[in-house]
Image (cartoon, rainbow, N blue to C red; front, side, top):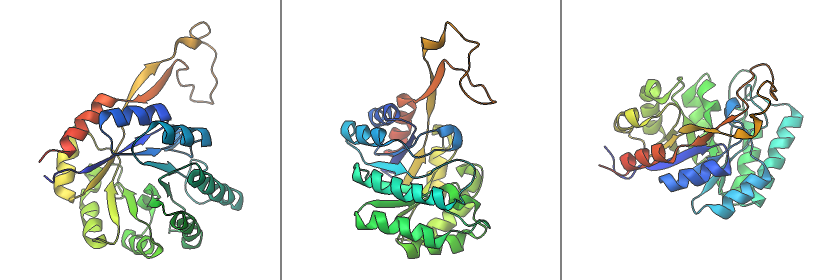
Length: 252
């Protein structure tokens, strides 16, 4: 297995990011609303993450859940959120914009890329790639745009299932763009993923449930929509699980 594989951790809050750093993460992806797959974090979250962390912070630019084809209003929000993230110190941005047919929206994506490039920051395209109809055409479009890194599960539900395509993408991209496997990676399958894909960077999330006792007196009251999740629980990055992954990444 490769030595010193770079570890990025997907985080839903500044507290998550701090736990990830304590566990050995070398970079974090900062989001909000992981229920929707990760949305844009608040400016306050970006500022506090940069204040409290010593590792790079990549900021998610995604205005809503439910696909990646955005209205003009949503696209304007993405551009403004990109400006704000860069202004507040983000080390890079991660985004994805598709056409109604699932192909990459090259025109809009190029604008976001140029904003980050002019600021000298990293540019990452997220797993919107995993629903594109032709992964190799999409790969070449992203490389031509100047995207630095691609987050992908190999167009499958999880990385272990997507290993064959991830391996091909890494070979095809060469040194033109970094391919970062992410989605369903666990300590139990990490060594296999690294060995069979040849990836030099991996992206994981590992949460544990925390209890917030403030709602204990009225458990029948809910604040969400139809799903009614428990109001006294929330997820927090599990630093011990991250530490386990970090140790695997740094081993031979």
